[in-house]
Image (tube, rainbow, N blue to C red; front, side, top):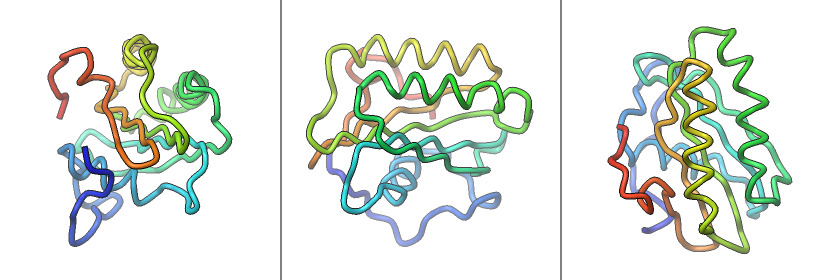
Length: 143
């Protein structure tokens, strides 16, 4: 999959829905730090799939760091009550998707679901490519 989606403009926070793969990926890619570094990005969406906030956690070098990030934001998300869905991005500038990401996708989905929201997508961004671990499982898109 190509890393940079082609869009004329990004969705506006609180106004435009992020309701399809291309828009979710565009927001995550636009948030990535330059030069690239290991980081995890969480895009928080309301029930109309409009952006509420973007959380960026740097130095998430271990692939399982994405679980730590989601566990940290899950309780405040549940208490807030406005967050209905989450889109994640893991930036791995020197790597890509790993076989363990299949299990991570399932665990992340469970954590988010247990806190009253839905994990729409998780993008793993490597040096030149992007993967969705959900695809590796053959699971249908949640958009």
